[in-house]
Length: 424
Image (cartoon, rainbow, N blue to C red; front, side, top):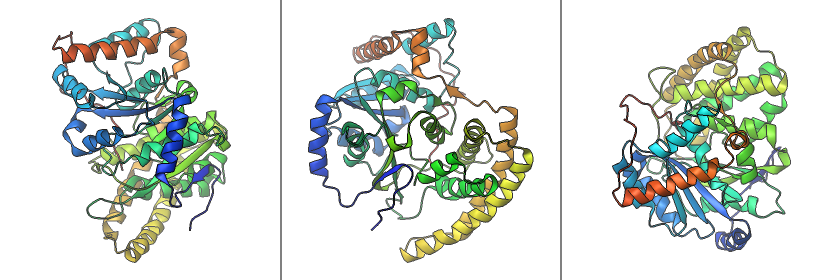
């Protein structure tokens, strides 16, 4: 039995009584309202995962509000999304994040000196959703739209530690075993073959820095599932690139005492998989690149570490050695559990990830500031009723979409890339 604790609280599942936990959470949610936020592309509606998520959420009575931040290319896509989620019993809001009304509001914000339109993709979707959800919810759980193993235990486990005030938790992140539904193979390539050996190599290079120890305490630092209080949602900068999950952990590290941070076991988990990519500008390679830049940036900001290109070159060498050691360990684990494991393929992926390190280091020196969306408190200082405007825009968009009243929609550029974070 695993009882191990870290510098952040680890909430194990020792055979949790979900019915009892749900009853307690439902009672607490009457006093402390809850929300689930789902950033999504329209394309997710055409895959079975999101249908299962919606159908499971229908029975999560402890969730009072569902907010969907949707990227849709047309009014027809948005209308279908509103209809898709209309069966939920919860108060449900589908924000058309690139629609005319939301864009107009953000343009007005830009005209007052705060330009958020330059941020695209999942970061913007999360930022918009957190702001609107915080209007009614004390605790907000966020997860992606492509989870193939979703059940009621996911939002339940994420939200409960925030609702029970004796726990004293402000931020709760998921961890899990990434095992395929069908093939029962080890997934989570970026977490296993990049982040884990990277943190080990950085620790060897710079010593036991508090930030590196903090990151290493998370059993799945790249999980896209977490819950946070509405206060924290309003005071946290959201990373605007593909390193969102690591970037969020950095923001929480700056803002929250470690005793108020936890991670919870969701069990066996899987979602759709992304390609490795043909270059560091694509797929999982791009994700690795942005993750490393985020880690380097936070090391410099919080640990007063001075990083040079010599460090990057040494990191590349150390990373390869550590990653190769981990592939051997994964092989043993897979053999014991009768899981398929292509050790050569894993070594090839390590070599690809190793190449990203040098490029990411060079990019970091060119732009050490990075891309982060200002927190909501700054936006509200510029436009105090911004959240209410966005909520009203979403409600009006939904009404008009369902009644076939067509608002003015900006022309869609087919070359636009949504920038959503790929999953490992």
